[in-house]
Image (cartoon, rainbow, N blue to C red; front, side, top):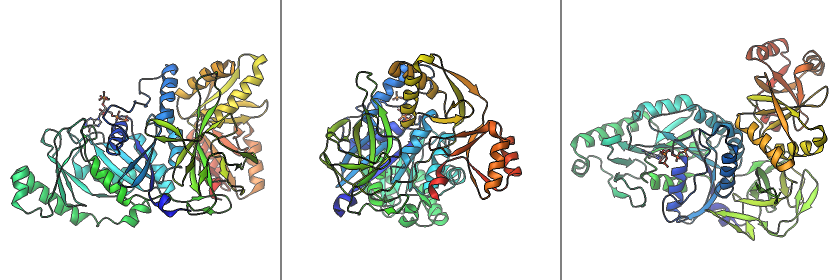
Length: 529
Ligand code: G4P
């Protein structure tokens, strides 16, 4: 396996609370990579907060995001793969799954809003997976929280140590630029929404008079004081700690003005990990392993009903992927080859002949993939770690046209394979309980069932608070629990038992009454066994 190909790749995700500037930053990174020529070229693929019932709009946006949710470009000899994630909380599950396919993450924070709810949840997933995180504090051209306070807030709410590698000089109207602590360079700010020229000057001696001349004595003194404080309070940056996910380097800037972005990108290229291996059920697979393997972390339906094909997004873990070569679909025990695998260089989808670890490729598929599927060169193993999280909204699905039962079942199966929502089956009567993290999914489901499968449905709200996966050290107690709580027991897609708890109190009671049982809010624990 070619080490050069592996070492030059960087596959990462950009995450943020909506509106922090993820799309803007992505666009600027592409600009630096020469993947686009001017700002504004990347279509906005985010789902606006205001979209509640306009599912046509959602669908349209989903359509656009097929092209833009993976973007590859070359920069300074590296091949960089950006995996975009929807910021909208209703699509959090999609974001969590995308995070299984990246090797590191850039987290964007709005300097005025600080850490928001969605940021905390996303960070939880990064912590769980020990994903290295770089933090970009955005919108320094506006007034926001004081930098030291913000760093404290990051440490406290995100539960990770931080280490500033650049430092802002003022903010809002008084924003003069950033000092690059890491490179000992001064970068003076001039608003620039389209170009990529930053005014970077080397300035290793902060005590030189030059600094006073450039930014004024007051700002210079303040900067000196603050840098001294940083060096006193924070340990020197240690790349190994970052790679272990124990410390997050912090950068400041303004994405829309293209400021501080190049420092971020340069440091990213220098410190972020090249493709790393993944655990499978029977072994650890390293990128350097000779044989090809990969897993599907995302599936996009083709929204044109005349073309039912879908695109499965596959992250390559090891070996070399080749076009028109037979690979083993482990779950289906089936050989498959792909005549038109695509790469995602910026906005273009183009057919590729080969791809390497870290790459994400699109495979056209007529329904044989589901999220989490493993492809290998023949070996039988499955990658672990595509967790299901407990949904937050539950509805029972009712088929409005019994003559269309078959279509309904087919549609539901396909939508669940795509990961649109989670299905729990309850007895008696094989009742279908659909669980999601957001209301939007129910609209997507009923719209797609009707338009793609010709089946009409209705949803009846179920008053559940969480679905918990159960493990037990005592079989008898487990059986006893299942009998006692039969009305609240269901099976998930893998036929694992879940407890549908109606309230936090009832869950707490169950935990107290059955200490032999463990109740898990993600299915990840199963994969760790
Ligand atoms: P998201 O993908 O995280 O949801 O955020 P997005 O990039 O769309 O940015 C959200 C808003 O914040 C946009 O304004 C964008 O222009 C603005 N923004 C991004 N970076 C900066 C920055 O460094 N400084 C300032 N002041 N604003 C920034 P919008 O009004 O929602 O949209 P638009 O019409 O400007 O595109």
